[in-house]
Amino acid sequence: MGFEGQTSYPSHVAQTGLGRSLIASGPLEKETAVALFAGPRVAFRDIPDDEVKFALLLEGDDWIIPDTAARFINHSCEPNCRVDDSLEVVTLREVASGEDLTVSYNRLTMAEYLRAPECYFWDPRWSFACGCGSARCVGNVDRYIISGSDNPPVGSKVTVGAAMGKGRGVFARERIRTGEIFERAPVIVSPGSEWVNLEKTVFYHYCFGWGPQLEHAAVALGYGSLYSHSYQPNAVYIRRLDDLLIDFQALRDIEPGEEITVNYNNDPTNQEPVWFELAKP
Image (cartoon, rainbow, N blue to C red; front, side, top):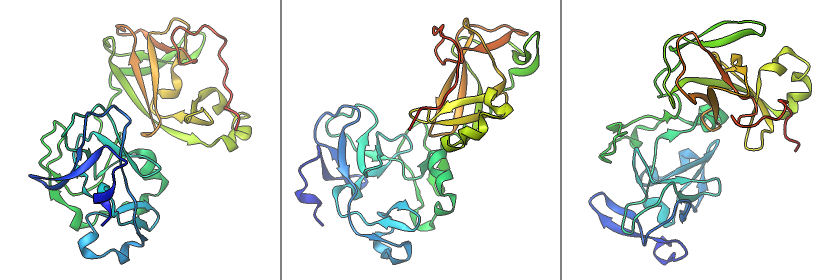
């Protein structure tokens, strides 16, 4: 193994109560790269038994057997690191010197899962009793958890009704408090290449811009695509790109029977005319 000689990252391997672990070598800022997954790439069937617990899925049946210090990063149900697209381990928050560096072994975003759901099988050799001690600890790590799918249902405080002079609208069934997320709507994403056809349909009026540069469109399920526009909205929508969700959150207390509105410009203070066009490639 070549990990002992790696000095380019502010981390090191040390013996802890969990065995060999990856440790922060000093205080770290958020978004600090602390390790890199690198090593031989193989099909799952070719992974030696003693390496199965270290292997990392890249895509399809392409796995990496890490021979760097990243192989010793431990699991936490509330991790302080993530693995980015370049296979670097990057901190999610500030980390104290000497703190264990952790990732989640079994949590996926909805976007990751939907790219290749057939790839995410669970091998029983990966299962173990978790002792991370976090408030989100699942106890036994024995399956994948898709972020967004384990959220409690949201939406019982709202209903669809007639918004006079406008068509349908969404109304509060009971009081909604300032800051409360009162609906969490899954979305169906239409790639930007389809927009030339989509904008000729009725769905043009129900789409949200989607993607890091709003290069795609999305239709929200539930009541998500039925909220009326207002330049004095009582709510705001929040895109959760990785989870394929839109949260609707109250900007002030909303009383029973009151129509819930958002500024389609996605900024409650933006008074510009509302329009929708996908970002150009």
